[in-house]
Amino acid sequence: MKEKSYTELMKLGAMKRARMKENFVQDLYIDMLLSEIQLTVEKEKLLQKIDSAIDCRDKKTFYLLSNELNKINKRFGT
Image (tube, rainbow, N blue to C red):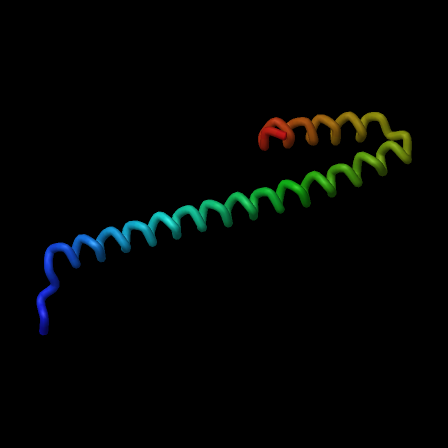
């Protein structure tokens, strides 16, 4: 079995670190994408409920749901 040189070992280590960074960034991107999808779905459902409250002229429900929407927007910075 042939021994690897120091240079070869350094190259392999650098390549491994680069792959680990790429995997980390990819995982981070996936998490961000899933959070964005979750936020969008949550906001859409809430907006539908708000529309329904407006149609029914239910001020109390409208204010409660609007406050909840404001909290979501603050939490996600939108």
